[in-house]
Length: 282
Ligand SMILES: Nc1ncnc2c1ncn2[C@@H]1O[C@H](COP(=O)(O)OP(=O)(O)OP(=O)(O)O)[C@@H](O)[C@H]1O
Image (cartoon, rainbow, N blue to C red):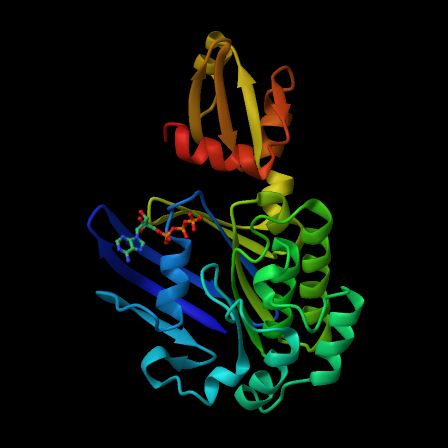
């Protein structure tokens, strides 16, 4: 559905070098801290910024050949864009009908009613959660095949996040082959919906893994200096000195559980995995 190979983009104090793939029928997450390069990647995919190097293939076509007609198959949420805040939902309806030949007005209005979004109130006066829902609803209401969602849950409370994720699950269930690329810095959002996750740090992808594998095979080993010295280090991804000895990240939990039954093995959360990948030593 989407393939990015060695996308390179430089700003004065930042350089991006990113490769990733979203497979048909998959939800792929891009996770990273503020300034890691998520929005830059999304903007490049959408042709909104130039880049120095790289190949982007989207819905089977090189980006340069991707036409306005092809864009009908994309649903997009960008963090710093959307409809003017001076418009109401009633104003948006004819715009969506004009923009998208497959705009499903009745589905859109059904969801508007479900979320109790006022149709005649200016969007600028909506709460953060309501604004986010409008953005996601416009992305999923025209039978897109691929959603490209940059931080759609940013600033939302737990309930609003859950409601949005539910909408995205419904989108995936609606049509076989639908796919999503979604970014967030909230790992629990991505963990619950993504088939695979890319972690980006300072413009570079530092880890790509299936979410299931991340949750089942990755672990943190907590060992004292003596145990660390004896530890087989071939399956350690990162190690970090701690007051008690070392904390080590592995993607082979079973191996250490079987061979070192006496050491403390903790099922790492995705946040802990990210922290270790960034702050631990290879
Ligand atoms: N137009 C620009 N000119 C100069 N630097 C830029 C520009 N756009 C982005 N950057 C820089 O590129 C880096 C990556 O920014 P980007 O917006 O892609 O990060 P992000 O992962 O989306 O972060 P956030 O979660 O805060 O939105 C940052 O250091 C940012 O300052």
